[in-house]
Image (tube, rainbow, N blue to C red):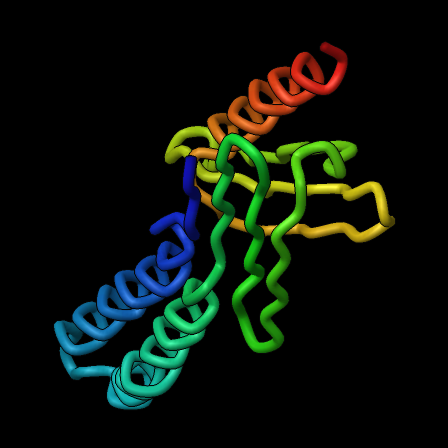
Length: 148
């Protein structure tokens, strides 16, 4: 099972671009046109919106969780990426947190606590329920094998 960043990380940039495009068209359609507001909207569309899209793009790169039958590979991505591959037996706790909007689009935060005290928090990941389910299922299988 594999999970990467969800497409919803682009929603803030998309919302701001739509909002300021509306402001731009509204200011341009006034008689006389509201030049200052129009220039402000153009500046936001030209500088802030591309910056937000770039920020979301670089934030999305490299973040993933891969659950196999024996271990889990975690990569945090971002500016200071951290990678780890650990046995499923060393995973103590896996939790998800979702806002209402994230539940609607299928995204969420995954928190993985390891036996050695390390903690990985991955925001805006896709299909967090399936990751927790895969880890729980594989941990139960590993526990049965180690007991037998």
